Image 1: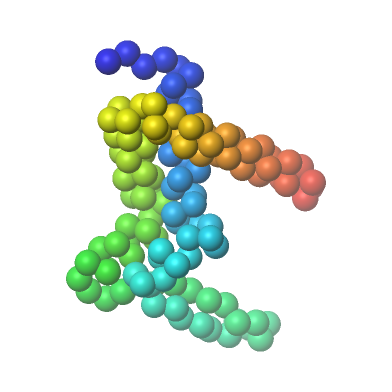
Image 2: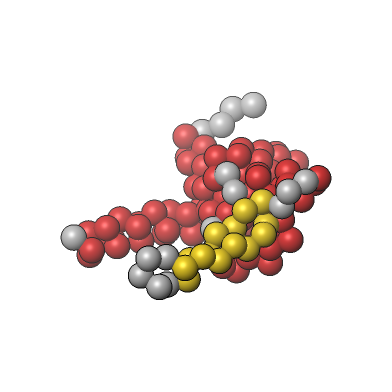
Length: 118
């Protein structure tokens, strides 16, 4: 199998965006919720800080630990993106392209926000 640099870039950006979606985005909070305990603590300024810790045992602990690790989730997201692109190329290309464009846009937004804050 030959893969071009452009294909690698598209797959990489799609994997990046899917990983961020699963690990950080509010829209997928319902996916993460069953695997975490919510801990609320008051900081020294009197503000409530919320922490999420993986459940204590079983499959929920395993999935919670996976979802709390950006690098771990990234491997599985990448495996899924690559697998679907190989198994169903015609079906998956538009979905992967959307994730890739969104990933690139999020990187650009981070760069813009960095310069605005300085």
